[in-house]
Image (cartoon, rainbow, N blue to C red; front, side, top):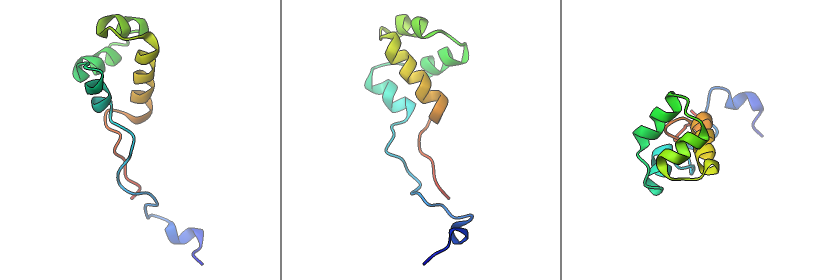
Length: 79
């Protein structure tokens, strides 16, 4: 039986993720990824982003939350 300290410094998870990247999400909705990130950088409100990209404010908020939690790319490793 392995003890917890045997895993110290070693990744426990594979170096990939099933969570789509922000770019993939933007492409799926036909939104310009770079323009979206620029809106986040300029602190546009969800309503402003929604109006600019013709999406709902709920979708804009979801994209913002994804960006804040995972960043631009969602591929993270455990090593």
